[in-house]
Image: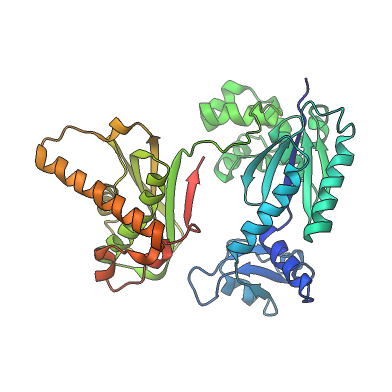
Length: 418
């Protein structure tokens, strides 16, 4: 049986959701004027999260500082982000999708996959169905989506990225040579800048050229794993199912863009503690432990460096992660060049309770310390669950005089990596 997959993608989601709200209030439509969603230009965290089509004419780019965008377009309307609104709009359009499809997979806050395989008697015309879903979202919620249709998640997502906004596109297997192979290789899903450069250097510039390339040749260019996935995707091969339930996370990470340059180890360690506190709390909530701890830093020139360590026993306590992260930072940041971003990642996860038990060379005293850390974290987690995240803050953070703890009380900086 041929699969039938839809990919529904909100056009310029954050900006569209804010624009729809303002239109309902009788205010100007942000989608029709140079506008963006972004933080305060006075803040180091003030970057462009989304932009309108008119803003593109001023070469405004997603991810650049709002201050830079305003220099390019002084009349730019800047709207602050509102994640509560985004969550509500995300749920609303996905609820409409669920009213049609037997299986819906949430891919991100503004994207989802719908599996209509075997529903040809209910929905004999997939293209008409896609238009109905698209038009209903626009009519009821006030924002537009693109719908891509294919026989795999890959092809459906590639199709939804064709001409925007408010469109329906197909990329069935028979259409791959005509519609996909002519595209530049950088447009293929999960092919990043580094892979694109390597492929371009050996003359592979289109997805079609990648599809026809010898797999063994590709392995020597971009590695075994990357070459197999890229070659399969270039040929439209993607058997991955549409999952109604999210997969187990493969890792947890948290990072913060710093409002002031960090130049000393004491301040950096305080931020590491706040990051450790936040990321372990979310990991413990899911009942997981990590065998691998990683630290990432970013300098003022936007260059990143990272360092990680594989542990012999899985850990989940704030103190254990913090102590490991401090060691990693000391090894990584020897030049003490000013930092603008710091992050922590926890990977190689397990949910086996025994995985955290390690025989200690230091005997019973160290095991008692571990037990005390576990008990402390359990108490702090319970207090925060009852009274809110700000009810307890770690002492080392408070001693620095920095207001860093507040950055990690919410979900906005934290990612679960799947």
